[in-house]
Amino acid sequence: MSTTAVELRGLVRRFGERTALQGLTVSLPAGATLAVLGRNGAGKSTLLRILATLLRPHGGEAAVLGESLPRRAFAVRARIGYIGHDPLLYRDLSARENLRYHAQLRGVSPVRIEGLLEAVGMRGRGDEPVRSLSAGMVQRLAVCRGVLHDPELLLLDEPRANLDPGASRLVEDMIGRPAGVTRVLTSHDPLEALAEADLVLGLRDGRVEFAGRADDVDPERVEELYL
Amino acid sequence: MTTVRDDPTAAASAHADGATRPRPPSSLRTARILLAKDLLLELRSLETLPAMALFSITTFVIFHFALDRTTVSGQLAAGILAGTLLFASMLAINRLFVAEREQGGFDGFLLAPVDRTALLLAKAAALFLFLVVLEVVAVPAFAVLLLGPALGARLGGIVVVLLLADVALAVIGTLVSAIAVHTRARDLIGPIVGLPLLIPALIGTARGLGSVLSAHGSHWPPGKWLAIVALYDLVFALLAYAVFDFLLED
Image (tube, rainbow over all chains, first blue to last red; front, side):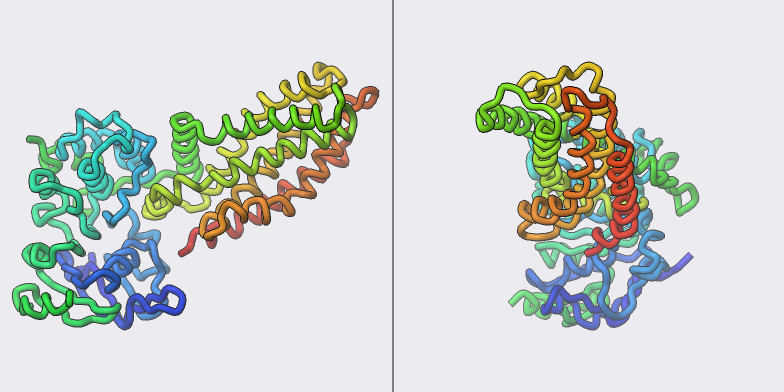
């Protein structure tokens, strides 16, 4: 089993003429948490979508859980959980129906769904269509979807967006440190992200501004990243 | 409070240190899961089928008055029926991937460790079923509003021709819809690209129906036209199978 969960060397990704990521080199040990920081448009979401196999890299090398991307993307999809800006839930289906659909696609027993709904306090509203739920409730369901298959690597793009403090606590066991899995996360609150990270990667316009241990990062450099 | 870690079912159903990772479904099973989801979504929203049925019936009424005839038969009847069903199918083709695009269904599917071609199979099957349901409503309505010869003995021939036509509409429609969904002018791409591609299938369908719907002709469509539509179905099914994966790439 690989002890490096994510290995990127000179990663490049373009969208037409615009370069979203330029020469990114990162190594994340298994079990560690990497916080990706940067202002809007810095390339955080693009990086997470590449790691989730939703986007192909245009240059450099990328390996996730020991598998090279994009060539071996099919081999890592069962092992990663992605929670992005979009909950990836059908609005006309109920919470249970959505989770059952995703469970079926991953070969996960539907029995697990009830445990997850209970954990996020949604068991009583599991039969209501997603369109009738609040943004916070939908985000709780998105977390359930992301961890349904008990992934080894969690890719969390602002996973606590729309969650109040109580709901944040509810999902802590699933996507926080107690989950005990490798994580790559972004947050609208850089200090919060730093607090739960082992490593930090600062991006500006798709390039690495700084990278290193979270304990060693100068808070002023983090602040400058957002100026 | 129960947490996920406390859940006794969690360890059994999902992996534990990679030891018992669930086996993803086969391609056919994946297609069934996707199809069931699509049918459930349509059942909940009723956005596509009622629109197709209403469009077809309205078109028959328009032809009824525009032609100033109470009945039609033969090639004219076949042309009206085949053309109306073709245009009605565009409504479904334009909406086929809407939920996937607007509600993150594409990403949800692409994140799963399943065969991507299953999406083609499921979408084509969904479109095929929509067309069959449409025809269950539209063909009797056509018989009541416009058709001269009695439907009874001709029904078998009509069903065979329409089922072959439905396969062409489903396969080509899914392919075109998958292309269109990634473009800004997606509502235009369906008709602009789809209709020319469907002309050979329309010719075969209309010719096949022409002899079935004539007042004195055979009740069974000519084998030549059935073979042409079937061959067209096969060619596009293989083409769609070959290129569909690439259409899902970013």
